[in-house]
Length: 96
Length: 368
Image (tube, rainbow over all chains, first blue to last red; front, side):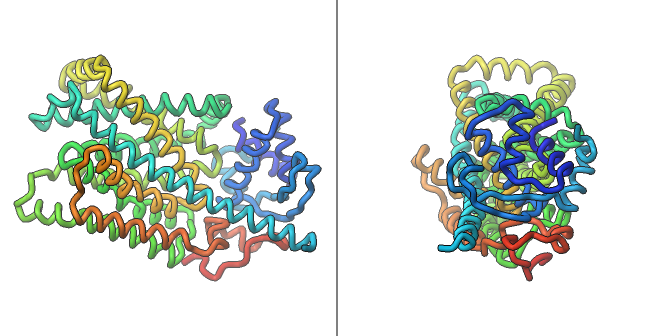
């Protein structure tokens, strides 16, 4: 599964997830590490949110969860449009 | 500052940055797209292409070979780019998701054999400046398709911005078309047809790509789109042309590749066009297809600047006025309210969904 598809499937499976939880899940799945991939996953989440597939349900600031830096952290949930796009793309219900 | 106020401020900063990056990517696209017209035009002055200007058949053949080599050069640049980003595995995995990757087939067709070939016709038959500005009208096709197809938010202000950008394009077009229609032009109707191909091809490609990018990465998606374009040229179009007209197309390709100057121009074309396209695709999820395309349409004025710098030939006055109008239109777009841009689609599900205390405010202009 490609990264963006995996992220959508994780959100579908868990309902709501913090961005750092999703980043950890992706890095574990794809054996990735470091700031670069953490940032790449956050950017991908930003794309998904601005495209309307995700709802932002909560925000917080917790530097212990963002590699020691004071960053805004987002909790996202897949919305109906996201589920619809997953179904159209063959991603829905295919998570392992 | 209280914790709540600080969190709100950080959130607002993050979302502002999100929108700003959307515009930055689109402007990068415009700068590099404009720069691409320099190598894209220079190829016509090198052998064997310089000798293929006498008949229409020769000229179409030269444009076909240049468009094919250009697509291959861009694909090589993109494969390198994806490898450097560590996304090669994602490229293969996305191709395997055929219900996603198949969307890049029509995107590659619209953007490649239709739009890029049309641009090469416009460059060759009329000239590089016309070729550069011919496609300026494409955002209206892209914005309309994205609006009708998947409800992309096009507010009144965005529509005004797009119209002003397009007005700039019309100012650039009109004198040439009028002289053509009154019979005083140089009989370059094929060039104008090429311009129309660019408008519809790029407009539709943007709308299709905007859809595919919902569920795939922009760097990877763009590379798949160019894989599709190379497939069209190398596996379908060139062999069909060879079957119909003999092996001359292969001879011209071999001659073209044996000229070292062409290799330099192709490398430059691959880099400028590849990275302009990456920037274009990266802007779509952040600010939408309509706005991304309208800002990227600044490639017209940028091309005029680049071509003036490299050729030292001053552009006609109507090109300059049209270019300035296009810039003014882009400012109208950039100064749009940020909360409108936070989520670029009027998604029905959002209206009933809780977005939490920090979600974007409900918009009165949704569905305009």
